[in-house]
Image (cartoon, rainbow, N blue to C red; front, side, top):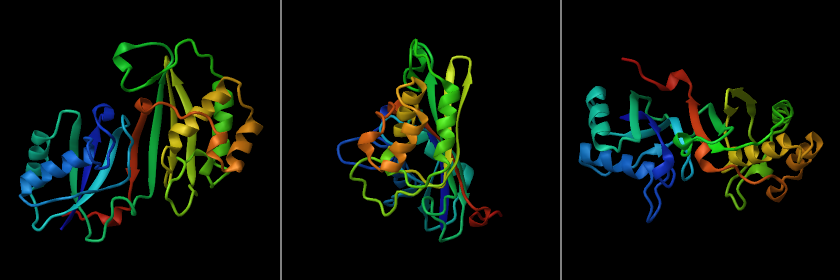
Length: 250
């Protein structure tokens, strides 16, 4: 039987989502907790990767179990075994072919910037003290993203992907007091894409890059032309959506 596990986590203490040698990851700790509870080796499949230091308000992973489970009991046991900065929010029964990665319709990220200094937000924002940004111009550049599909210029170099195409549905900056947040939603994202976009848009906001120059970077399909990637700690995966038909409601 296949289940989707809904997670949230603060990524500060982890080397990203994916299991890797000689480093602690979210996936590894979830696998160990599930293996302990169900007494059989378990390896979950996630909706996607988050890099070292990146956070998730919502990420899904699917798991195959031999028998039907008591969901509330499983949630309680998993949260008892996992560290406090990783939380299982929900578990949902799905169809046998439902896939956490391939069935996702959209993914949404936020990149959070604190316009100043705050010691309590060091792990969860990029702090730009005394930075003067033209947010109107940054939003004009963000709108340009919707006119393109090939985002190779914002992808990590040497990425092993079949296509660099992404369908960006939303891209905008919203400022509330000292917090400036970039919201972006697409059907899929390339590795390092959001952080590279943010870094490049900051160059636009600082008047180091024109709107025409921003277009030229996208059309160049060359990562070397884009800006420096924004730091990991400001990035949050906030939502992953799926077709309702993959969930089984009893």
